[in-house]
Image (cartoon, rainbow over all chains, first blue to last red; front, side, top):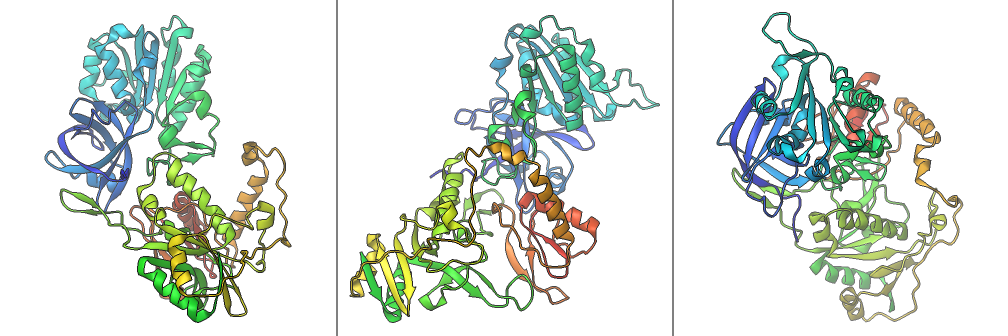
Amino acid sequence: MNNEYLPFRSEILEVIKHADVEYTFRMSYDRGKEHPVKPGQFFEISIPKYGEAPISVSGITDHSLDFTIRKVGSLTDEIFENYVGGHFFMRGPYGNGFDVNMFKGKEIVLVTGGSGLSPVHGVIDYFADHMDECKSLTVISGFKSPADILFKADLKRWIDDGMNFICTVDKAPEEGDYDGHVGLVTQYIPELPLKDFDNAIAVVVGPPMMIKFSIQELIKLGFDEEKIWLSESRKMCCGLGKCGHCRIGKVYVCQDGPVFKYTELRTLID
Amino acid sequence: MGYQLNADALNTVFAKWSDTYDIYAPKLFAGTGRSSMQDIVRYGKITKPEEIVWDKRSDYSAKDVLLPVCQTLFYFNENTVTEAEAPEKGAIILLRSCDLHAIKRFDYMYLQNGPEDYYYKRVRDRVKFVLMGCSQEFDNCFCVSMGTNTSDNYDVALNVKDGQYFLDVKDDVLGKAVSEAKAPEVDVVPDHVTENKLQVHIPENLSSAIAKSHVWMNTTSAASNAAAAPWPVRPVPAGPCRMCSSRKTIKPVNAAVYRRPVCSTTIPWLPVAFASARRRANGCASKCSIRRWNSNSVPVSRCA
């Protein structure tokens, strides 16, 4: 009998600091053949005595997984006390994740807010390396301030690969040398250079309010509701559909999600 | 096959069953209720038939045996994590017909909905059910309307009448100890009620759309009002949260007895009496779904 709750030990290979409260932990992962991981899936990361939390995978290689974590509570406070050479306990992968085949040959639009960039980081990484497999890729990524921008090293690489990447901040500091975009992500959606809405697909990940208004703008622009996807990791706890914390009606977010079609997710009201 | 046993004979049977099984039944826990000096009936380990409470309905369901509120899942060392061992003995659970029907729901959730729950399965595989006959209904029972007044998927059925015990045995393992008691064989049909004072009519073609009916808005409001009421509010047991809660009883300074939430993360036990604090406590309880208030209107939420 297989114990699905049993975590395994994973070494910290690298810690990448993005902002004061957001780090990426690169963890060892040698179970990729038996348990392949897709972008958008999540793992339960635990530290004994501090608890367990679902964290989305933000990067996938043959022998490692990246987890971009924001320091917001007792468990993540403790996670941030660990550095290279330390370890966490993990179990997963859980959830449905993004299927990159779904995006192939299409005009892709990704709209993210804050740490919402990390679940789709794997999708962006894949198409950055395989730009010929999609017609176009546009990413609109919003952050609170220049200091909160995630994956700064990757941004340059993605833009060099030919991606249309719009990185915007809510408010630019009065002092400093920031010369990028300023404003909410919704401000840039009407300017999207899409040619064929029948062959376009959009993914929105971020805070609920940002999702709401981004979807409104996408629909106004001409997107079919069926072609908008969301990732919403709402109240997930056990990851196995047992505890019921994430249940909305008949849907278990941890099992049936966290990636949903907009037409499906909008009916899930609790 | 049916048998008639007196108390001594049943004691002997229980003693033999206890060699390989822990026996659980509704049991009286004096003075450990929600408030001080209040008794409670809940499932506990028994050794003698006299400990079984027949004349009251259990305040908590039999699921506490299958899904303990507090359970050690793992032992962590610095580099390793090991599973806690399974209970040495199997379990015999004495329960009523409605409770036995409820087990089907647990089986569905923990064995079929997604991967099997390891900890549930290893206990469930070694459980035998003894059906307690209901010779009379209790207040607010509506089992007849639900069709849960009778069950036939038991291992042993047990009726009690005039100090005599009547057993209908289906399971060979448990039946061996009964047959060794050399009790007279009789025909036994599990006692069950055939009519309730309270009748519930389920509308035909009931759809899940009812979940969004406006009637639940009133329920929410009623629940809020109940939270503010200075009298005890009966808790509504819902799904268990084994991952992060446990049941411990402590006595705070004002001598009332509370069940203290043992939380791994956020809000611990909050003995505060203000509405704003209650709302914060509800935030915690919303994750765990069990909340209760004591007679002094002090909100005590369990788990985070």
